[in-house]
Image (cartoon, rainbow, N blue to C red; front, side, top):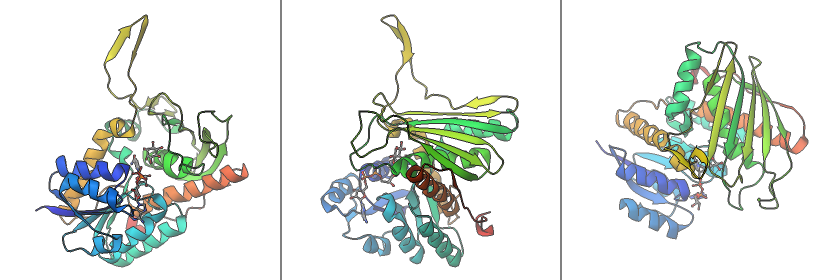
Length: 335
Ligand code: NAD
Ligand code: ISE
């Protein structure tokens, strides 16, 4: 059985996912695409031989569309996901599920009213082999009780449209989800420190930023977000436990010795760092849809919980204060 996919938002990652669904993932065919920029939609449609549709609503209701991939901008995700739930169609929504926690609640309410999970959120790091190995080590008790985690999230540069709140909402949201998952714990407070700004940024942007988070169990997590670091796409993570530590491996690269130095190349783009994670994530999602099973990946609850933390982080950035994370109890539907 081939699942017909509709893709909403054919920008950077929309195009990546269309290529992946067309050339790599089995059991899927991109049937339709849409974007507010219809010319861009037509270019990407060409990759898959898909139909171009002029609105998200028409795409979701289209008879050739069995399931939807949302790759538009974060602030419009919630309305598009809600429309998919209303149509009873499975939806893979790129992170963040929403930029406003209240919208996340609406998504969860709609999904629960529908009666079964339809939504998966694109927190692809849960599919990365290195992070999965870290999770196995922690769950097996090999480093003892986790006490601290140190994370680094660096991008070489960002577009001018990237603003200071996006450091939490769009970038550190990956670490927020990953650490909730790795530690099996929820965040309870966040503070944002603002170091000296790099000169290699657009004027409006506070870059870098340092997020300091605490969990319900009392673990402390620091996340450096530096999105104009110039030199590459660099993701680091170390969890420190009572009897040992576990560190995310660097991607495998050939060791180079030349000109009196020894080292290895650093990837430049997230698509190259997380290729395997993206591939496995979309294949598992398509398999679940094809088997008419609920998705097994990050849920609306995970998307919502991450947004509650990023909303607090944005408040912390604006106020300079330690802001509590006010997360309600997880509904049993998402147990
Ligand atoms: P982008 O700006 O390149 O693309 C977004 C596209 O959505 C644009 O073409 C825009 O015209 C379109 N769009 C915006 N509003 C729309 C609407 N209402 N209806 C239809 N189309 C609309 O951005 P991007 O880098 O591709 O990011 C898209 C999403 O994917 C973001 O949420 C981002 O956080 C996420 N993302 C995730 C990863 C990851 O590592 N998982 C990597 C990159 C981007
Ligand atoms: C982007 O949207 C991503 O998700 C990337 O993984 C992240 O590194 C980048 O900072 C975000 O803007």
